[in-house]
Length: 417
Ligand SMILES: Cc1cc2nc3c(=O)[nH]c(=O)nc-3n(C[C@H](O)[C@H](O)[C@H](O)COP(=O)(O)OP(=O)(O)OC[C@H]3O[C@@H](n4cnc5c(N)ncnc54)[C@H](O)[C@@H]3O)c2cc1C
Image 1 (cartoon, helix red, strand yellow):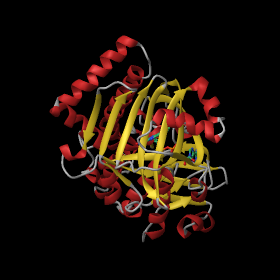
Image 2 (cartoon, protein in one colour):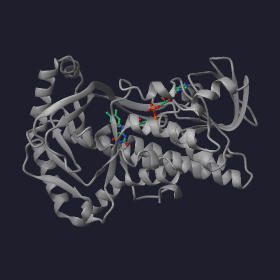
Image 3 (tube, protein in one colour):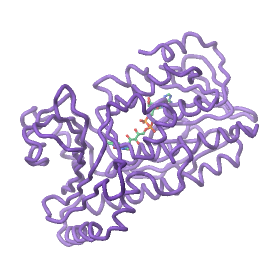
Image 4 (cartoon, helix red, strand yellow):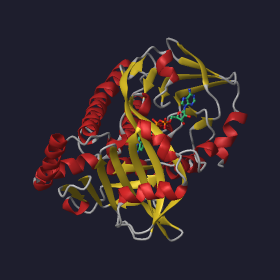
C-alpha cells in the first residue's frame, strides 16, 4: 500500500481546510483528485474504503472499456503510465443479434490508427490512482476509511463533519459517492429513475484461442452478453464477460457449480475462443437508471454515478464520469486562475449545462437500446436486425457511431482533446 494514502489520516489535525473536498475516492473521485492536484488545486479526497480494500480480488471483478477520450484524459494527468502495459486496445467491435446473420462491425482501421478504446480491469485502474498519488510531488490528501456524518453549507465555505470526529471545510465539495450519494440526499437533490428487471453477471474467463483485440456484444433475449478482450496474463488468453440476465434467473446461474456455470457461458460464447476456464470469482450487479434533478446545490456539486447511473450496455458510465471530472477540472482551474470563488455560481451552472445534456442523451440511448434488444418478439427482432445491417452499410453513419464509442464527438473538455 502506498505511503501517501496511509499517512494522511494519522498526520491530519482534527480540522482540515482545503480548496476542494471530494467525497468518494472511487474511479471518478480518484481521477478528479489527481487531475485537480496536478493543476495546483488543494484537494482532500475521502472514502469509506481503504485503497487496499478497493483493489482486493474480491472487491470489483469488472473491467472497463475506457474510450479513447478517457485514455487521453488519463494520459494528460499522469495516470495512464500505470495502465500502459496492462490494458488491451479494442481494435474491432462486433455486435450481433443472437444468431441472426446480420451484424454490425466496427473496425478501428476505418477511422485511422487509434484503437476504438481500451479494456482495463477496474482493480488495475484503481491501483493506478493510488500509484500516481504516491508518485506526485503535491498529491491530494486522502482520508480513508471515513464517512460524512453532517454537511453544513456556509456563506464562504462548506463543512463536512466526518464520522471519526474530524471536520473538513472547503470552498467546494464534490460528491463522487456513486449512485447512493448521501450528500445528494442531504442537499435535497432528488433523483429520477427505475430499475431494470436484469442483473449483470460479471466473470473473467481464460480461453485457448486469442481474442485478437475484438470485443463482441451479443443481444440475447435476457439482455446483452459482452465478451471483452483483456491482456494475456501468465500466458493465458483472457476476456471479461458481462452477462446480462433476467433478475429472477440470475441467482440460479450464480449458484451453479463451476462446470455447469462454465457450460452456460460456453453455450453463450460459442466455440470461437476454444476451451474456456473460469478465472477468479463471479460478481453480480443489479441494474438501473437514475438521474439527479440538479448537478449542484450551493457549494456541493455531483460527478460520476452520483449524478447519473446508466445501463452498462454500451460501456459508457465511467466514460461519462471521466468527462464530468475533466469538465469540472477545467472549470475549477479557470476559477482559481481568475481568483474567483471555486464554487462560483456561473461556473457550476456552466458545468450543469455542459454535462447534463450529454449524460441525459447517453442515458436515453442506453435505455432504448436495452429495451429494443432485450426481448425475443419476432417483429421487433426483424426490425432491429434490419437496422443493424443498414447501419453497417452506411459508412458515414457507422463512422459517427464509432466516434461516439471513442468519445471523440461533442463539446469535449480540453484535457480530453
Ligand atoms: C457490469 C458493469 C459493467 C460496466 N462496464 C463499464 C465499461 O466498460 N465502461 C464504462 O465506462 N462504464 C462501465 N460501467 C459503469 C461504471 O462502472 C460506473 O459508471 C463507475 O464505476 C462509477 O464510478 P464512480 O466513481 O462515480 O462511483 P462508484 O464506483 O460507486 O464509487 C463511489 C465511491 O464513493 C465511496 N463512497 C460512497 N459514499 C461515501 C461516503 N458517504 N463517504 C465516503 N465515501 C463514500 C465508495 O466507497 C466508492 O469508493 C459498468 C457498470 C457495470 C455495473
